[in-house]
Amino acid sequence: MAHLDIPGLLKDTKLGRTAIVSSFGAESVVLLHYVVSVLPDIPVLFLDTGKHFPETLAYRDEVADALGLNLQVATPDSSLLEKEDPYGVLYGRDPNACCTIRKTFPLQDAIAPFDSWISGRKRYQGASRAALPILERDGEKIKINPMASWLESDVRAYFARHDLPRHPLEANGYPSIGCAPCTQPVAAGDDQRAGRWAHMPDKTECGIHLGPDGRFVRSAQDRREGE
Image (tube, rainbow, N blue to C red):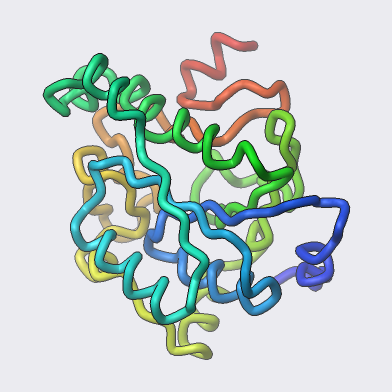
């Protein structure tokens, strides 16, 4: 693990008002425990897309209760869902559009009052995150990735040291857990995120992360078209 003053960074007043965005996935509790030990009252934003595994929602509640989180749940606009995805199957024909209305737009609204936000992304999670910086510009916001340089062994050690609960789907081969229709188990040795949108090889992110140019990064194809 890199020896950086991450607690000092998180407390830096230059970041303004800060929130954590958490998916309550396989490794999320490590970030949450780490950050709330420094900033106990920090808002924790969860995007309830309406497509999460039931296990994720139960795990969210367990972790929020155990850590005493200041949990704030954001949901998609019901009128937009009724118009664009009335039968709840948009993920099947246009996953990017589904992510936009169920994740990107709700996140934009949820982080609007904040100057910066904290993500749990790490470099070892896959090729698309290999060069992830600890601090980055995210449109008009600053995004902090305090665990960017952590190794997988660091995460395992943190789980053990603090006796943190594991996501119940992790034991079933889900190292990266998103919405149920677009997440599947991963074979041993594969990229951690290989089970996300496995039917769309070009898609690597859900679209909540902005590139340096302020555009949402949704897929490899989107990136190529923007070059």
